Image 1 (cartoon, helix red, strand yellow):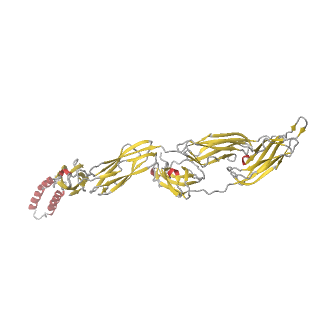
Image 2: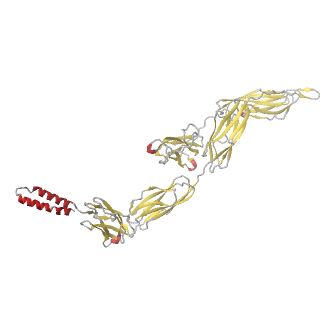
Image 3: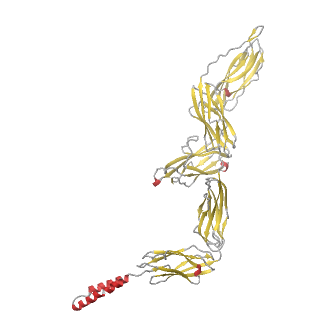
Length: 631
């Protein structure tokens, strides 16, 4: 079309020359300018121009082992579309090279556009190998030529150890890791192209894959880390596949493992509701709660407490605290109801342990009333011949004990019974009554004896104060010793003062750090784990009885509900024990279920009645990093 434009320009040019002959005095300048402009347009429109690299070089490759393709860029630097008719490989070692793929042959290449040509190398023999790639097109300098070359080396061997990974039985959601080592035992380097997992084992994953796209030199090695976290029970399997440039690629490593439910502690407290019914004031009644270890691992009871409005009316004799029960083993808690006022009373017994349902709860109810006062009649002994009165002298009429530490016994104090009547008096029974009746123990060798006039017998009383919840020490304890005889009923006041047991130093453990701040994480996405270190400075091992995460702030005992944002993923304390003068760790992850700033407490209870907590903080990110929960 350009050439046509130049041809049609000849007619006005001839006419112009004729006019110039007729007009000898007119300048030829405008005509020459127009002619040069037309010629510039014609010569500026170049046809298609193909541009290829002059040479492509491959790394040394094992004989009969193919490389991955190299992509060569072809550029059209002309002003018209470039059409590629064919691509050929020629030369003595043409069979060592292969055109793998190309989008250059499918459609014209527009000016200043590119296409890609794939070339692979698989040497047939040892030594230097080369060939020429030719592109046949409609460019003026067709065909385009590119030299391809590489070196064939003897067989390259890549060994993988171990040949299989067996993760064994693992608890669900517990992460374990093993390594696979790739070793190049040959002299030439091995290129690792790809490492993948195949199969239906969803619990397997690649933790660290530093070998991909790496050329392992002769004698070198690299490590692939494989993780297994079973999501369900039962056996799982997968296949680790390594694709590389070695002579025996690809390599396959079988993976297998099984998921199992972790042994867990369980607890049942029966009955769930304990009703004491009506009880007179200044008296008490007893009932039992049986705690059963219902899980598959030992149950450790850390503490027992009574909460609620009736805490001053209900008391527990803690026979279970600081005990570890094997599965199906039981222990008994004895509850006492001693109402201090009329009306209904209610409280709740809490049993803190290492079961997932901790704390166990038992509802306590009862009512108090005022008992009617009974009059005691002094009996007389009547014979057929005459009326003779049986009498007893009791000394002393009250017995006061000095201060005594709880859970210890005082020295016994005597109470002397002497017959003073004309008729013998028979000792029919001795009881201790009153609010603190359990704090006094009686030895009664006089029971059933008949004391004649001036005959004596001695009873001994020991003060053994029991520990009481919510008692203020020193605590005054009082009761009555009631003596029943044929000569009448007699009472001896018993008094004593209970003191608190001295604080005994127990081994304890420390936690570090006291607070974990997690990185911001999108809702329902797991953050990287963080660890808490537990240190035991004592000479004895410390058993962790409870490990739990609660949403609310720690305020003394276990409070709040179990957290859904933070999770203990691994306890690196063998059998949950902190070794003597040693340490262990606990791993925690953050998976926010809602957006916003979230808090919880990792709460740890031990066999030495010690409770430690670690503050947990993290921020959940919603859509657009706002603070709205994601539904």
